[in-house]
Image (cartoon, rainbow, N blue to C red):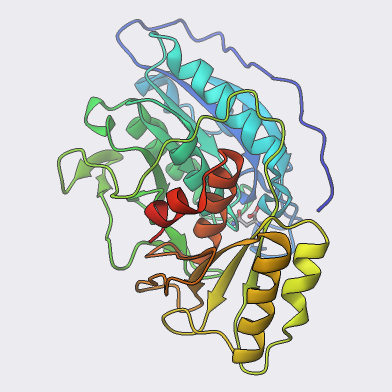
Length: 343
Ligand SMILES: NC(=O)C[C@H](N)C(=O)O
């Protein structure tokens, strides 16, 4: 992936007087369709993601000032396919610093939806706070008729400033729904109701932009904290997709080009072909590669079969298992700790 420059912090203050009775929320903007601009107001494909700055996103929703003292920080302005570990590490440290300030009540991250679940999961595992961290995107560019970004942003900021939102980890907001970053995943390439956590369900929804929760604050089982302060890069972990007669050499090529870990998006409950399995076992012996087995079905549970350096991704989908393995390898987890982390 191309390495993109990280833009300098771009703090936007507005003339609106500070209202001490409202929560102070910082919006960290990274790009995506929520900041996308198309040539026509009916275009919902073929537009430029990450075209508008955070100041324009905030100016488009003056209602934000009725519910918060909002501040914008431009972290990057890219399509979410271009998000790198460097951007994620920078984002984590900026959010941690903002939330460690007792005057800041919550953080919102605007992000492209394609890889939103990866970044949201990363933030969930690397930020230590009880305060709300809310990741929000949009499916229609800002220039479209009925763009969903402005309402999503207003709801995300409302959630970030709500005392009832504390202690729930990082959350994802789109289409009037609130979900845990641990489980929310993009399920449709085009529809507005694309983010779902089918087995685990939503945490709540919005009524007149006010968050209503189904449960008291709770965190996902298996949610670990990884301290990445000072990290400048993360170990490479690649995902391989399982299918009939898959090319077993793809695993070798990933490892020999730098992958320290592999995630197998296996068939069913983590199945792999026998030629592929032999190759993985060889790689484990030759390079000490760590392998998490997940499922291409995107649902259900994968357990370990006890093979050396192979772990079950449990109910993490492959893209979330990749982030978890990357962080665990960064933290220097031993095989024994990886068994406990995954299963
Ligand atoms: N809806 C979106 O945000 C998609 C866009 N390609 C992105 O992920 O940046």
